[in-house]
Length: 58
Length: 404
Image 1 (spheres, rainbow over the protein chains, first blue to last red):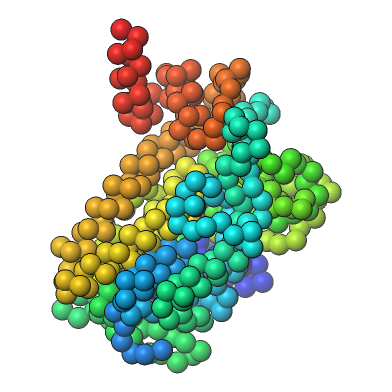
Image 2: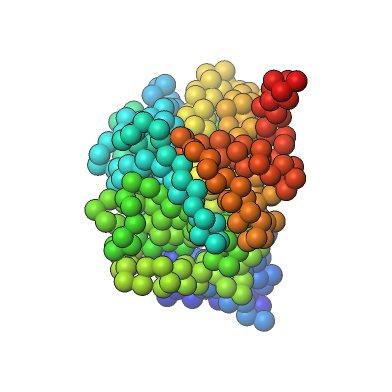
């Protein structure tokens, strides 16, 4: 399955990625990001993450 | 926690707490839920707020005020400074808050008004029956619960899901969000009475860097860049570069990150049985990124409308339209105008920003009002700022009449 990888050591759990996900595939749960199967690896979240914590796996 | 309330508010930021407080004050049975274990933490905000606006909602309390501001200094890419300060010496016009204390204090206000507050409680879905929102599904300490409500108020911030679950498209495009990073720093050596803004595409593409005093020599040093300009370099990279050049000896005591909606108003902020407030409703200011007072304003209106609608036993959008009308009347025009400014600002080259700054040489600003600054800029640069004319159309008309 293609998806994204959120580096939890870099992530500041701000939720910006959740707000830009066109597929509502992300969820900020307290201090981590959960990715659901709706993720299409479009990469918008990786682009806007303030701290470069997200990588798209292709 | 019961399994039924009049109102469930999702998210205990300033908007959610104001909504919960105002609904509870009117005798409604209110539950305020917050997914984090601590209200107000981690901070995702520069923490600056206008004094006049804040006072409309809460009496300032030294426990959550970090610093008072006398004015702003704005720096163009070539270092030209525009200073805006209150004329009356010593008059403070803005606050820098301690959001960790402030947000908790607001939640406490709602608790004192009678609302029940639950932390570490996350909404996972809405209960929808016959086209009406009838409550929320929540997870608390790993267990799921159904909580029924006559009305749900979604105050769940930039990452809002509540609106989407009810069919309102709140997703932000990359140019609808400022992606932000901030350090709380000691040793910047900047004047503690002023907030500082640095503009330029090299240092903060389609955004700006801010330095807000936090008292006792501390400062919030942060950056927001437009999401569409992020990618090769991210907000944190620009911030690190700026800090390395500008404050090489300053020390980092905290890291904050966040996304600020700058989309401008969305088409609708209500559904049957549902109201959205604050960042969840994309009500933050598209040019400054400020969202605290707008969220408090709309939260308050939402709490009042909740009472009116529940009293009438009609939670349809027909009744909730009162919310839509009232918040747009109050802040809708400001948001629309700021969006026009944002859309103009993000196209400027550094040369243009410099030219704009130069055009204000000798102009004396005696207020911190952004509108005053923009009007002065407009008057001196009508050609490149022609798109802004709609904002000033009444002022311009007056000017022209006057000249004639």
